[in-house]
Length: 184
Image 1 (cartoon, rainbow, N blue to C red):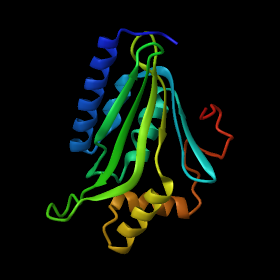
Image 2: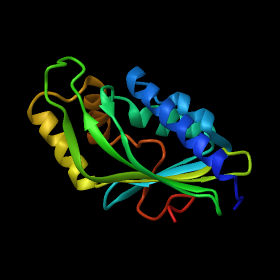
Image 3: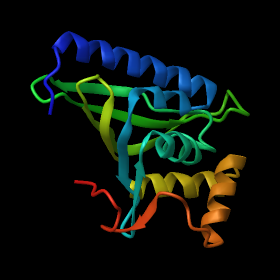
Image 4: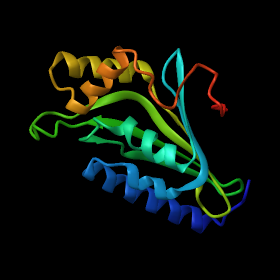
């Protein structure tokens, strides 16, 4: 666990937040891959049955930042608070998940209730060694159901749900506790 100068970590956070804001505007989160080490891991729990784990920069770009973010155009993830531990090179950012309707700018925003966040460890080169996300899956599920009921689910999200309901094995998904790299 490398210790990095606090100023370097603060600079990293500012660059990360700006690239996130740019990704939200573009509806494309794949440029965030530049922040990851080649052998980085990125994982999160997806409810009581599955974990998601992406191993290496290519899976992170293609799955976590590509497939998993498809259909979330118009979504925003404003960071509310960032905590930096410069002794061990770890950062925790707490964010909200806010849905806007890109087809109807006058529609009210919807927010997923609960706390979401990302926990990062950086390597000696200030690249993400690993990232773990957390969020309230029950509230995410509720908002998706509300969007479906209101006919506001994006085409990309509809396609994701259809693939899942059809039983398609989604890349990076593993039965609970069986990911090749543990969440913890």
